[in-house]
Length: 268
Image (cartoon, rainbow, N blue to C red; front, side, top):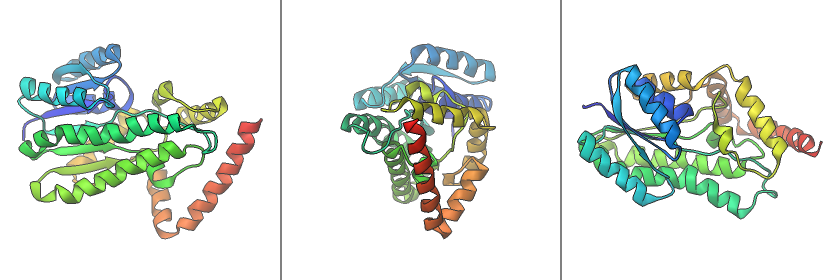
């Protein structure tokens, strides 16, 4: 297998750290994002880390841009071995407060962006018997209150990944889905939601996290090497998922309590 990887949302945060982790192994990276300044910075860091590659601006909502990126990977790198659909945006607000536009925006980027990324790059990954790594979220599994549109989009990414896992097995294409919890990232730069103090609450959780995007990238690297399908980088996430599988009601009760707390906080 050659060492060529494409990462969406590579201009910052987890996307950048994933690129750097594989760059340290000498990989060729195709880096895409809507943030061109961030992309240029990532490429510089990738080269310093021992990798190389190219950058191309790409909005994952636009299938033609993703097709153009796939074409560029073929032309410049001769194909692709690993596709990382990482681009995503944050969102929050109780269901009654979220507008349908909030839903459209969230689904278009966090779910359909991944669908389109898989679709555009599948022929290349089939050719190289490579891997698809989709970045979802613990929100896909735990459905925390006050972010239903985000939960639904990310749950869709898990369902898509499960579908691809079984459909592509005979074609020797590996599929992985990553469900991180809160970690130190700039995800909140893209935050969109009706209640500003909900944003403050989420920001606090992100900042308080002891785990960094670099830690998560390293964990993903090791789990992918071991062939793990569902990658849960956080210890508390793994525990919560185990509890939910055994006793879902316990989690629903806890989330209902959390919803009440959130509602009271957003009133103050």
